[in-house]
Length: 308
Image (cartoon, rainbow, N blue to C red; front, side, top):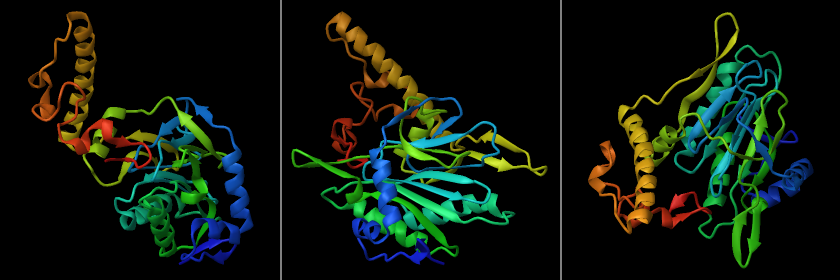
């Protein structure tokens, strides 16, 4: 129905900076978030959300208490929470298909909220910066517009995006906040970085590299018939992706071993035919990436989430 801030409908034509200045509580929350120190989040009770993944969890879940994501440059981290039952969704959107992703975010929360007697939907958006191609600005507008098109009222509580999340150094622009975490039980959102990015980090990374759609069931907490919450890991079903993730891990290990042998044996190289499975013929031993410069990791731009 509407995207609201302080009970008033958000003017979508505004830039992010103008929007928060029109709503002082938004401006104050953005200021407080920026002023926080970055907290290191450990693996206990934590689940990392990779790019294009979606995770939804409930405060009743016994396995997960914190969701988080980082390395957000032009992409945005989205947190949607139902204040009645505390169901919380965290995802990281990257301009792939915002029109399809926002309804998926909404439906994930509604699956927990059908029997909620009270409460409202609150959304928090963090990420992006003033990049030259205005990719962050476009994504901010897309997300705000799509949330405004949903059939439920959604209350915008945090907006730290694009020019609000920008810093300049030597005439170059960078994000201020790269990562956040949300405590499902307390609803606290804070700046964070993460040492542990599991489970199945390589397998899940293969899904992103393969360019697949948003994964909504990599990790979910489901309501059982007797209302007991349990944690379930659903592995990505595509056998090719699973095999690619396995082979990627093996190839990286082989490359590390090869580098050690190279130093010891004065330049001995690992040939591409030794690399297993789907990686054969497509990856070079030096970097496990094809000769196509668009996928060369040396061309990866941390300020764009994409290969140049």
